[in-house]
Image (cartoon, rainbow, N blue to C red; front, side, top):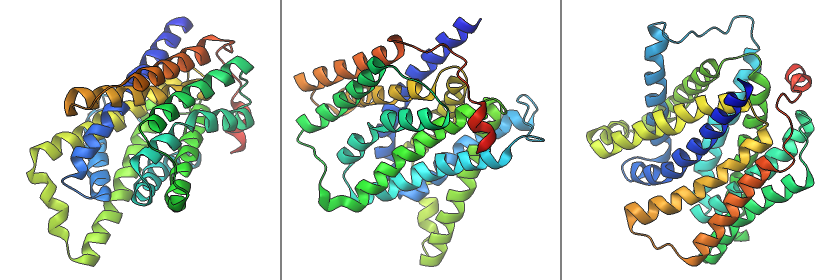
Length: 314
């Protein structure tokens, strides 16, 4: 039974990478119709509304009584609030390529934080494989002619903080999986994300007298489809599955799967946008895949890592 749960967790990890890889495409489409904050508002509106239906009918049981809600709110502050806010403003001061390069370091940051707070142990081979997957992503971007420009330091700092936010989320979610079900954590996170981004967006439009711009994207079927994908699939589904994954495997092992999304985004760009796939795309992709497989196969720790220490101290 435990082995079956592990297989399901790894399947979800690959699925999440595929979903996130396609989310870049849908985000580009959505941003063509609405600003970043409005897009985030509709994204989390879709996720919160869809999940509210089974909760309202009692098909999904939600209860926060007697549980560490304060730590769950901290989780929501890291993701989605911190992650997406930092990402939006970071990309205003840096390029999407710089964002991709910096985001690839998330597994490294997660490994460090997980080793400190969850006492997760990784072997030397696992560490090398994590760095191999990161190198695969960086290799692809560098060969495309992308680099990190120090003149974009504000954006670089904000984008690096997104790594910290996601790493913190991964570590804390693994700790909280002892107290909350995936549905309980996901519903709280989606609700806080929706309420916060809605207030910020409406306040901004009210101050500038542009409320009509907030509603205008709803006239586009393409935008609605993109918002539904980003909200329901890329936010709600991945949050539910991520919470389940983190209840079964270590945060440091799960985070390396995020680099697989680079491969998916390359494939999506080639299939839907006609972008070229070159030899360096193949080499980088093979390095990423080798890194992911190696991290999870070489010297893998037994499941059931001790998480109680941090969950009781945060």
